[in-house]
Length: 73
Image (cartoon, rainbow, N blue to C red; front, side, top):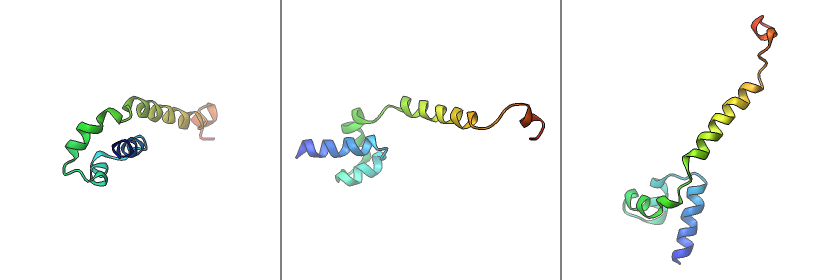
C-alpha cells in the first residue's frame, strides 16, 4: 500500500500538482509534512526554466523581424 501511495504522489508531482493539494489528497494534516516526505520526487525547476525560455525564443522566431517589420509591413 505504501508503494502505491508513493507512486500516486510521484505521478501527481511530476504532472505539476502543488504540495498543498497533494497533501489534501493524501490525507496529511499539514502540507509541510507532505513536502518533507515527497520533496525528493519534485521535478527540478531547471527543466521548467529551460522550457519557458525556449518557448519565448520559439515565439520570437515565428515573428518576422526583417526590414519589412521596421517599415511597418
